[in-house]
Every structure is written in structure tokens, then in C-alpha cells.
Image 1 (cartoon, rainbow, N blue to C red):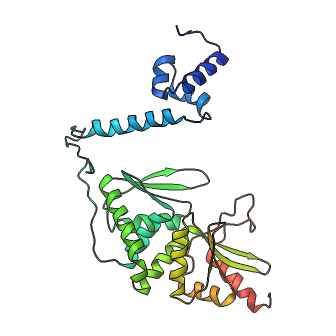
Image 2 (cartoon, one colour):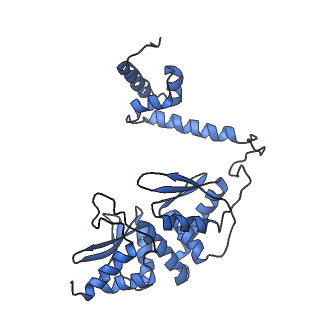
Image 3 (cartoon, rainbow, N blue to C red):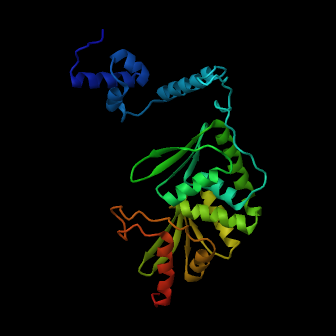
Length: 294
């Protein structure tokens, strides 16, 4: 029988015991009669067993299945893959520079889930760019979530939009190498705005782009070749590197970083100590060649 007047230590041990027996938080709330947050505090660092993971997955699937066919609070019958509010994406067949920019951002600092499209960044310029470009395919405003260090997530909660953007993402990755140079530049600008940084330390001058996908890095490298910009992919550190004056000058002229895209000067390991624009750092790095810094 459950002891109701448990000490803090006894309660903690009971939480751990139930978790190791593969009870979910919901089940533990019913057993212990305490809030989910209180229980979670004691079990959050415990690894989930395969049995528990399978159990949680089944619960999630059951929730989705149970929701299908129900009439929601708006009087609309829910259907799999359909918006509850009858909000639909605006489909397109012809790619433009703005559409390439939008979909490319979902590949880099964006995220496509089953029922939403998200974009996370600390740059107000990039967040506003994404919000404006999204109007090309969706008429409704996103929800905004403030995270740490002024980072903001824009969330478009619509299952139809998520599915459509995911289709267009696959299409873009499949066709970008055959697109016009204008569209290729749009893709490259989105990549370096989201993933790029500038190294300018003494004689070290380079533009770097970080990406966990080596396929994406190789794709970016191939696109840069179309503009006679040499680069190399570092597979150990998952980055692409553009260096040497002639390549940096071409990068600056054709791609560059958008106005308003800044480094985080408030980081403890910041070299500059100020939130400078990345394009300004790149300009300083290129100008340093003229000053004889070899």
C-alpha cells in the first residue's frame, strides 16, 4: 500500500522505483497523487528503457488515432493529414528566388515536423525574412516562442503546410543543381546566413558553414563551383571552408551575408566582444589583404 506521508527522500526513491519499472509520468501521477512537474524533477536524468520508449510511442500513436474522425471544438471533423481549421498552403509549381530562400531555410535553421514548420534564430533580420517569405505559401501568422539568449522560434502549426513544405524541400534538394544561377545563389545565401561564420584572426581569413549533413555540404561545394569559388569540406568537423583572397572576394560579391545578420558578441568566448555584422567582418578580412597582412 502506498504510504501517503512519505519524506522527500522516500518520495524520490519511489519515483525512481516506478520509473525503473517503466511507468510513464501520467501513470506515476495517478499512483503518487503528485504533480507531473514534481515527479519529473526526480526522474528527468534517468535513461528511458526500450520498453518505456515503446510504451510512450504507442501512447502517442493511440492519441493520434483516437483524434481521427472526431468533431473538434470548431465543429470540423478531423481527418488524417488535414487542417482542423481548414487552412491550406498555397501550392506553387514555378520556383523563384524567394521560394528557394524560404524552403532552403527550413533545411538549415528550420525544422519540419508532422504537424508544424518551425524556424529558429536569434537574428531579427532572418526571422522577419522567413515570416515574410512564408506568406508566399501560407496566409497565417506563426506563433512565437522565446528561448534562451534572445533566440526565437517561429512555429506554423498546420499539418497540411508541414507535409507540403516537406515535399518541396525534397524537390528543391533534388533539382537545385539544375536551376538557374539566380536560384542557386538564393540557396547559397540561405545556407550561409543560417550556418555561416567568418574567421578573421591574424592571417587566418575564411568563411565557414556548419552542417550535420555531409550530403548538404557536398551539395553546397558543388554549387560554389558553378561560381568559380573554391572550397573544401571538412568531414571531421562537418563544415565547409572558403578561404584565400580570390575566393573570399567572389563570395562577398555574389553571396555575402545579409544585412542585419550578426555574430553573438555577448558570448563568453566572443573574439570581438560586440555583435558585429558578419558582412562587416568579412569586409575587414578582405581589406586586410590590401594592408599587407599575408
